[in-house]
Image (cartoon, rainbow, N blue to C red):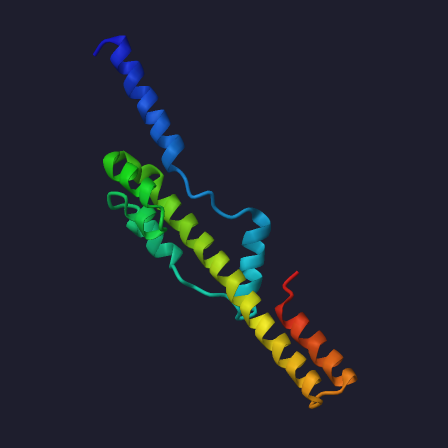
Length: 145
């Protein structure tokens, strides 16, 4: 193989690694927040990170599982080389999906409970003191920070 072909192959591999390694993943604060949601029983688990990693051993499997379809096609094309990064992508994408699903769920539940308190205050079933006490409890329940 001449030098130009080698350069093209190496450039292609580097580009593939940069394009496919790829679920951006969660930062350390988001990972800690997800652990806190899990420990308080508020976490939503749409995807199993271990399954995402295991599926990453299949051609494009981790990326497809993590809803990264474009990356899945690229990883499929670069299989078996993609085994080096796709399990990590599948794991990270699963965690990211779970994190955002949890955030949406917690927000919705919080709004639902506050709305019920607001309705109770408007209807006169709750006094302002009871409303304030109950709202603090609801806020504390959903405030992980």
